[in-house]
Image 1 (cartoon, rainbow, N blue to C red):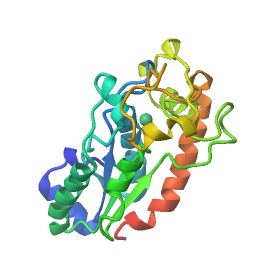
Image 2: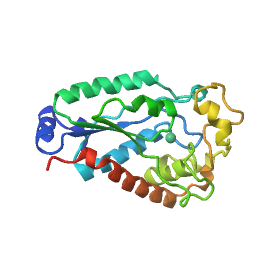
Image 3: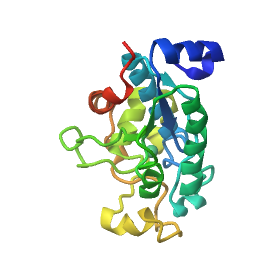
Image 4: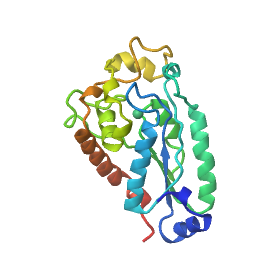
Length: 235
Ligand SMILES: [Zn+2]
């Protein structure tokens, strides 16, 4: 249930009678190659937040639409980034007001593995938990990759399952960079664009809707396991 669709007194009643925990989707405004839209991470995290809300009756807060991105992505139009301390500051500010209204636990849901993005949201306080939905086992589902990369076989499969109308498979350009060679970009040490990089890593041409469905189901199972107790309804 989306908190933005409710009135304040409905939210107040929900906190005291149904569930006093809140899910906060944290997206990004980030390039995903020639074939996936900039809103990809936000679309997925909002979809997963709704499922978690259906299972627990915890409300879903309006998403934070910006995250921390790689400095090299500044060259890829539309992408933007906020500083880690800004992201952390936003979370501290908004939860401070919600806490005073009776919300007990805040679950930050994200689908973006930039280490500085993750670090910014870790260990803020005991009542705030960070959960990265992308952290599942992929090796038995994917054909060409053993783990998730970026706009890759895994991420593109999920997009094909959730919103095929926005995926441009005919424009996929494959250019893998080995994890070791990509590390300096991932850890923000290098801000030039890697040679030949159009924004995706791994093997998106191997993506299918069926793999996306398997990945989504596995992400849902793990998310429920890891987050249900934290978001437990009042009765
Ligand atoms: Zn992504």
